[in-house]
Amino acid sequence: MGGFDKSGSYDITSLEKKYDSFMSPAAEIQVGSAKIDGMKIPITYLRVQQTVRNRSGSAEFQVSGMYDYEKGKWLENLLDSIDVGAKVTIKMGYMKSKKQVFFGYVDSYEVTYGSGHQPNITVSALDGMGLLMSGGERQDFGKKTTNEVVTELTKECKSAGLISSVTIDTLPKFQSQIRKETNCSNYDFLSQLAEMCFVNFCVINGEMLFSNLMKNTSSLVELTMGQCLLEFTRSVSMTRNSVGSVVVISNGTKDKKEVRGKAETPGKFGGSGDTAAKKVKGLSKTSRVIRMNFLQSEKECKDMAQNVLDYMNLGFSGGGGRCLGLPDLIPGRFIKIKGVDKKSNGSYFVSDVTQTLSEDGYYTEFEVCGLRG
Image 1 (cartoon, rainbow, N blue to C red):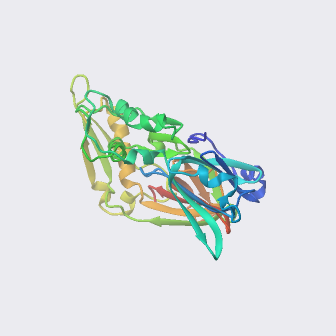
Image 2 (image 1 turned 45 degrees about the vertical axis):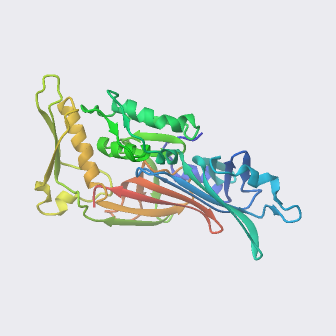
Image 3 (image 1 turned 60 degrees about the vertical axis):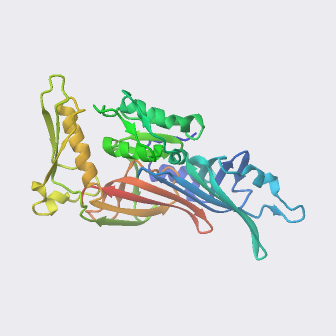
């Protein structure tokens, strides 16, 4: 099973060699007991969407040309293997090499017959996070820590075999008891908890993450305009939450003495321009003060203040791009953009990736966000 690639680093030259100059795009789909090899079974359309924006990833594909009119059935018993809840594994790449880009389950499927075209099967799938979206019973977690609560609420995905593993950061320990109210799904509750802890909540290639992915600023790959990178758009826009500084205060130390930490400079990613506070007169004087009594030291307050400042200013710069099909490109990592203007060149955090294989070829689209414009 794939999992989140937290340390890999690639250059286009080695990827070009690995994927035979990006020629002959190919895909392989395992759905239930059926293996759909794109070199043998016509996959007319395939799209995989992955995100770190606290929502489920998805996939959709269509298969045609596999129906036997004389026998009145699908070849290789294809339709018998496709059903709601069946596990789905998708690999994309090129004939020489393919890489897993999705693991989840069938959410819905549709069979279409018509006199003017070949019968086809269209399948929609969700990653393991989709399982958390149903149910809304009230739960009181007593004295359990935040980490224990997250582990308990995500264990059903692991036991159902819809995720390979769960990675959870060391989360803040809230003084008050954690409680999930009625009509709040596990997904909604965990999304709220992720925002409180300033971490990403997502599933990437079968691995469920409850982690601050922006801490790892190493570059996954460098994309150069005119080579692998076909399009790139960068935008700069004031966010309503932009502030000049963040102060976090806590009296959660052992002696109950008040400690505080302050952050005034957002992280250095999202191009090589200035921060919002430097561009907009008066913004540098604005500050947000937050009390978080579960923090136990000045360093914890300062680190949290930096997380909050980055989170509030995230999206000051943004954009997206389109490149040749790269199954190695995933959200939750940083990439470097090169070959455009001086301000746009730089490092960006990838929030969303869409892999598409169709009659037009194999392409990867991505969305990025940053703190500098």
